[in-house]
Every structure is written in C-alpha cells, then in structure tokens.
Amino acid sequence: MFAENRQDIIRQQLETKGAVLTAKLVEQFGVSLETIRRDLMAMEQQGLLKRVHGGAVRDPGMQRYYYLQERTKDFSEEKRQVARNAMAFVREGDIIFLDEGSTALAFAEMLNERFSNLTVVTHDLGVFRLLCQKPGFQMILCAGHYVREENSFYGSLVLETMERLHVRKSFLFPSAVSMDFGIGDFHPDLHPVQKKMLEIADEVFVLADSSKFEKKALLKIADMKREYTYITDAKLPEGLRTLYRENEYNVFTGEELA
Image 1 (cartoon, rainbow, N blue to C red):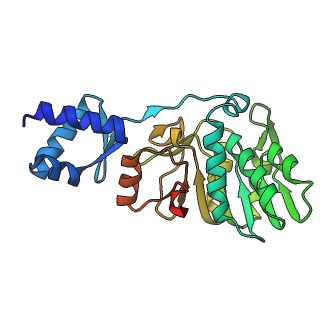
Image 2: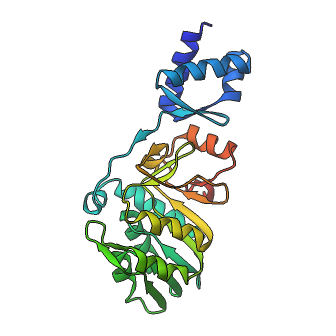
Image 3: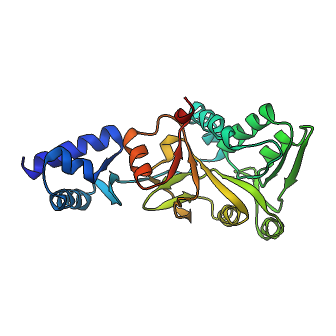
C-alpha cells in the first residue's frame, strides 16, 4: 500500500476516533514502526494531526472564549453528566475546593442534592450562593477583586486566603485539555487562582465535557499529570480514551460504573 493510501485511512480514523495508536497502525498495515512514524510526521507537517507519545491526535484547535452566561447554554447535558460522574469521587465530610464556571454550577447543584456534610471552598460567587444555605455545609468564600463576567473573585486577597488553606480535593473546570499543550483556560486574572488550587490539594480532579479535550486555550494552567483524575462524559471519542489510558492518564467517563 502506498503512503498516500495509508495516510488517507489514518485521516479517516482520526475523524471517527479522535486519535490513533502507532502500534495498532503497524499491525493494521503490516509495515515497520519507522514507516508509520514517517507517515505521521508527514501528516503533522501538513497540519492534519499532532503526534503524541504512542500515537497521534487531530491537530488541537484553539477554543474560543465565551462569557459565563453564554457557556451556561452550551453542552448543558454533557456538563450535567460530567457533574454526575464526579459525584463518585466525593465523600461525606470531604473538604473540597471548587473552581468557577458553568460546569462548577452544575457540580454544586448535585452536591446540594446528594450530600449533607461538606466543607466547600470556592472563589465562585454563584457556587457560594447556591450552597451557603445548605445545613451541614461549611462554606469558605475566597473573595477579593470581582470579575463580573465570570461572577467570581481573583487577586492577591484570594491568593493570600488560599495560602492558609489545605483541602483534600480540588475540582478544576478548565476550557481545554490536551496531552501536548496541557490544561488551559483564558482569563488572565483567574489563572493564578486556578494554579494555586492545584498546589493546596491532596488530589486534583479535572472536569471538562468531551468537546474540550484535545483543544488549546490561551493560558496554560498546568501540564496533564498522571496523578490527576480527568472526568468527562461518554461522548469522548474512543480513540482518545484508548490513547490517554495507554499513556496512563486516569480518564473517567462514567461508563466504568456500568
């Protein structure tokens, strides 16, 4: 089979599965590892894919930034599924930090329904208002300068408060997740708060609907790390699930409980 034919098939598989594994392509085409590497390199140079350890993904596109009010309308069912999936990692009595955003609000609603005894730290005013009336919830609002379009707080006052805190679990809600570009978001004021969240927690959970995977955002919060847990919905393409797990990233789509 000519290289052009192999690359056409690889392109089709990327479209349907979101990612390809180098070892499986070697087996599928009956060619050497070096041949597949040359194919992937040529396709990367054409902007058709991005090579990663163990395979390749579709070239990550840049996410667009939308205000919170707009984001609340998009992928609402997927966000609720992500929030439901994340409930498997919360325990009564936990001390948790919640990031801001539309998925954070869906997450907070489910905490309100399912738990009676939590300590919740947040810099999101909407999350705080939603949970502060819940009997048995201890609430800590990290307040400072206010970002109206995100309904949340940032700045030195927030960071100084966080410096004095330690939580069991931080739940981060980024705009983009990528093996190559890491975990990303857009708002420069909120960026230091999100980075600090990762430092003060025993465990980190990254919650993002499937549309945000293998995308890029303007600001990098952190590299993808194997000790983090990535929670998404069941629409994450099969190829991406396989590639992440081959690279030992803990990706949870909810189907693991079925």
